[in-house]
Figure 1 (cartoon, helix red, strand yellow):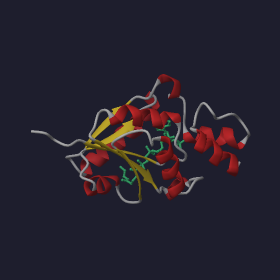
Figure 2 (cartoon, helix red, strand yellow; figure 1 turned 180 degrees about the vertical axis):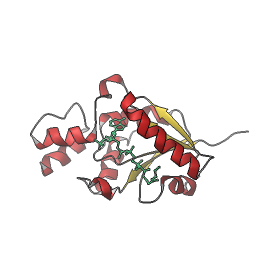
Figure 3 (cartoon, helix red, strand yellow; figure 1 turned 135 degrees about the vertical axis):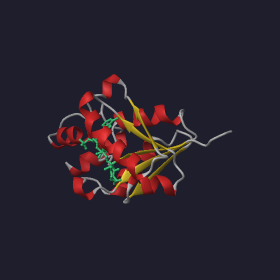
Figure 4 (cartoon, helix red, strand yellow; figure 1 turned 90 degrees about the horizontal axis):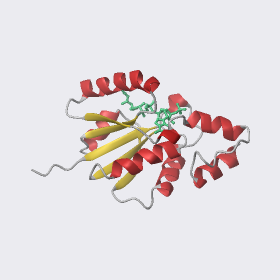
Length: 160
Ligand code: COA
């Protein structure tokens, strides 16, 4: 039986970093279809609007096949059901991410038992990265060229 594997990689991506992109590049080879789900997530008070965040990712993955980038503002499990996804993909950078991710994974399983959460590890060189750090460094005029793609660098330079 040939089961279509559709994975959802959700996040706020405010903004996308080389760490996120590393996960996306690794993930496309593991599934038939990868949907990067960009959460509106107003509680995080994002610096960039959701369409801008979607645009940064689209521009950064234009060379990859089998990947879609979509905004969402619903429960993740509902979004996954809507797109017939069977996998939720999350990145684990360090042990400190684990407790929160485990809690979220179990809660999502509670909401939909047929969805599997799969954790992936980014390259070691990106394991220290976070979107908040990037924003803080850019705000103070620091160099973020090794952390984010050129389109994000440009977006950050307009704001900071
Ligand atoms: N490289 C670099 N940074 C990474 C990373 C990687 N590979 N993986 C995670 N991060 C960082 C992000 O940059 C972000 O950093 P920041 O806090 O400095 O901004 C942080 O890790 C994780 O943030 P975020 O992308 O917001 O993910 P999250 O784990 O908090 O979950 C959603 C966000 C959208 C997936 C989650 O809130 C959700 O599912 N919302 C929908 C509503 C819902 O279903 N709620 C019930 C959940 S049980």
